[in-house]
Image (cartoon, helix red, strand yellow):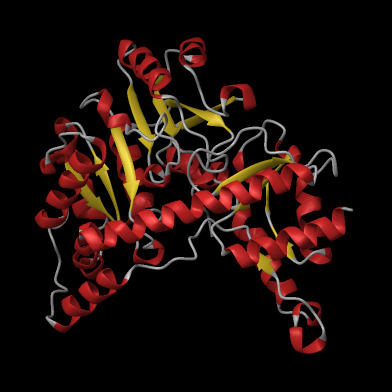
Length: 393
C-alpha cells in the first residue's frame, strides 16, 4: 500500500510510545502489590486527575435524557459561544463577540482547521524549540514547514521579537506560539508578545497562540490572553485542561471576523460539528458554582507546583524556569544521565515512575530534558518523589 508523502514529516508521538512501555511494565509482577511490587506512578501524561465537576455531568445527563443529540451548527451552539464571550469579559476584561468564536472538536480540530485555512505547501511557520509536538505536525499536515527556533531558560523557552524578525524569510507565513507552554509551563510576557505580534503584522503574517492552559495561570503578570492585542490574533483554546473535560473532545477558536466563514466551511466538511452532548454539558462550566470549583482546583495545581519544583531541584533534576502555568515541570537531567530517553525508561523500571523524555518536544538538546506532569494527586506526587530520591541517591 502506498502511503501519502506527508507521513514522512509526521514523527511518532513519543509521549504515547513511552506510555505504552510504562503500561507494559505496570502490568508486570514488579508492579503488582499483591506480589510485593509497587504500582506504576504515571506522571507522563498531561491530563488532570480532576474530572468534569457535578454540574457539567448533570447537564450532560439532562441533554441525553431530553434527546438533545442532533447536529449543531458547524460553529457550535449559539448559547455556548455566548457563554464563552461572557467568560472572556468576566475573566480577562475582553470584549470578544460570540460571532468570532467557533466551537471545535477539541483544540486538535481547532489547530487543524486553522492550519488548513492559512497554510499551504512551501509556507514556513516559526515555532519555539521546545514546544508541543502535535502543533508542528498540524503544520506539516497542511504541507507547510514548522521551523523550530532554539530557545533557552533565559528566554523562558519562548520566542522573542528579535528572534522572529531575524528568522523571517520570504516563505514565512506566521508564528505558532503557546502561552503557557507544554512542556515548560512558561508563558510569554504580554509586552514581548505585543512586540512579536507587531513584527508578524509588519510582514503581513499571522500570529496564532495556543492558549489551552491559559485558565491555569498562576502569575497575574503572565495570565493574560493574547486576544488583548486585537482582532488580528488567532487564539486556540480547549475545555480539556482548566475545565477538566479531556475526553469530551471540545475546544474553540477565536478568529478575526474575516476568517470565521472560511473556517466554518472547512468545519462543515471535515467535522460537521463538535459533540452536541459535550457542548450542552459545557454550558454548565460557566455556572458560578463550577467556576468556584475550577478556581479551587487551580489553587491545588499551584500548590502541587510549589511542592514538586523545589523537590526536583534538590534531586538534581533542575527546573531552570518556574512554570507560571499549566501543570508541567521541565527538568534538566544531565546531572544524572546524558540521554533522557534511556534515563526515563530506567526510571520506569527502577522507580516505577513514568516521566516523559524530551525527544518529543524539539531538536535542540532533547536528551537533556525530562517533563514531569504534576496533574496527579499530592499523594502520588509525594510517593513518586520518594522513589526518585531512593533511586537517584
